[in-house]
Image 1 (spheres, rainbow over the protein chains, first blue to last red):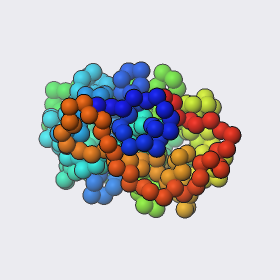
Image 2: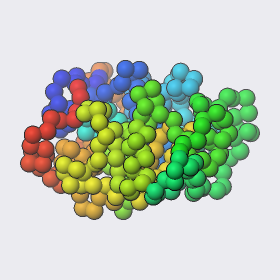
Image 3: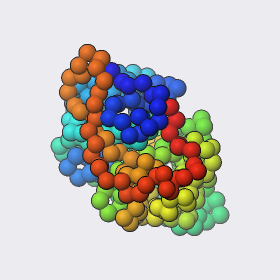
Image 4: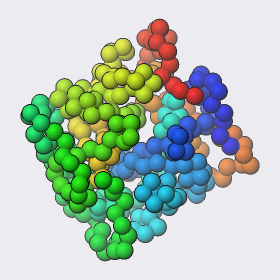
Length: 155
Length: 155
């Protein structure tokens, strides 16, 4: 199904899909909102998740916290309908454009996982860096949706 | 400079920057075009690259092929002027919005590294998957720009 990676020119300029999975069998994935272009999340897929995503036109990831294939939206209901999949020059990262309607992609409840902005400029002598919230309204209440689930966030 | 990661609520809902670097000291980075919102590339930073990017307002990455800090554009001239930096819910991935003018971000010569689209739908019995080129015109000739440099692509 996937082409062999034995030629740099072919990987970069060829037309055959030859993804590079890392030593854990994963490839990073950038997911954007098909309607707005906004970045929603950053995740990972293994080969099975990539195949399922291509064939079912819904996003499947590899959950590194639960160590299993993760059909996004199975708990929250916010399934990601895949409109396009692209791969980069050396075929070691994937980009999905998805339709989530008026839903959310972030387990904290925001539409996008990237709701905080880091200020630019000189960092003051090892002082903590204070971020600005760019999303204020949560789309859903995570306590209600993920009642019994542990947080996927790892410290 | 970076807050301690000892509380999930604080990492997810707090205002202090507390990035999670992986066991190699790296955090993945999504880079988008400030003007169009298009995804340009996927890279990695270590703590020093992140600090330099915040302070100098130009993108620095960690080159995994050369194992060194990489001030993007030093060879090609296509420096990335950083307009905004965001971090995600569990603070283990970064998103940069950058201005590259009419330049390119891809060492193959295209504006974006994501110039190939993977067709959706049933995969035919282990047949190779043929992609579609979404960018046709290269912005520069990589042979001229990277004359003596080895390709960063790893097989």
